[in-house]
Length: 458
Image (cartoon, rainbow, N blue to C red; front, side, top):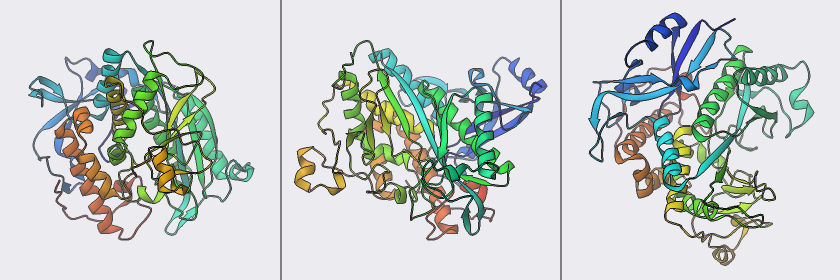
């Protein structure tokens, strides 16, 4: 049966998925216009929990959200619905920071990622492929927090036949494939109630769209069965946390790959990312609870600016090195709380800055067996491991705010608006959940209290 409704969907700066539902008949009428789209209040992108408006936003004005029909797909979790992503645009051309007139909205995160990818292709003839691992926990009670099951990694008991968790995971797998997303595998993970869904490699923008749809599929199917699916960084402090590992390969006819060494582009790309990694973390780990996940000794990537061949205690793991076609970097520091368009744009943009400047890779491979955290300072210096990642949300915001490369990629205005919204959202979390370590991925959906206005100062 064809869908009767279309969800016009977007992801805001706090990574909350939002959508409006249109009957197919009206959606088709909308597409018949000279510039089809729906109006969205500009204030809604700076408003957290409906009342608190972040600095840099006003109550006036409206964006036009233009459907990107190349993203139209069925909702496997809602059989009567299809979903489409879009482009956030100004209704009339405005002057950009570089003096051009454009309808592109500075806070359109999909456009930012598209721009980075296009520039990398046009300037350096480089293409990227991106695949994601989505880790999450299924909860049957939120007060107190109680996982749906208790198991170890890939253990059979984590998907016992006839259990609600096995049913949920089966339906997630079927729904993703019905939606046209390539599912590679799913399995029980290490923490209580934790599972992982792995999807196939795609060009960056398509990969981010697919990740958003994957998360929506997971969340809604769990809800249908009375469960809560959370992508919160770390719920159970005695176990590992949940992340959104991104696997990225770098490919270009200008940079030949050899079996035993990094190619020129692979090397300079990695150098660029490492140079700006403390700032990238500001996008990738956007809430205080993120820093309870990214710690040393928990296979989460550790806290040192480094990389390592098959080393899960590095924030960047170099993996599948024996295959020229399959080798890639795994970025292990990314949270499920992060907006994937922002994170990918930051990683790829900083990596491309490295390629453009032919940046030399100074940090040496850290393959183990010792982790950077377990080395002496002298041993780390031998590998040029001399910096640590931000250890707190405040440190990450400072690194992000002061990074010239990030501001070049996104523009000053977009970075300031992100920081303002991020600050307001965390002030609200701390106001209503003091001492809480496990702030929800869907904070705005879980907090039902009336929230006072909180001003942001960036």
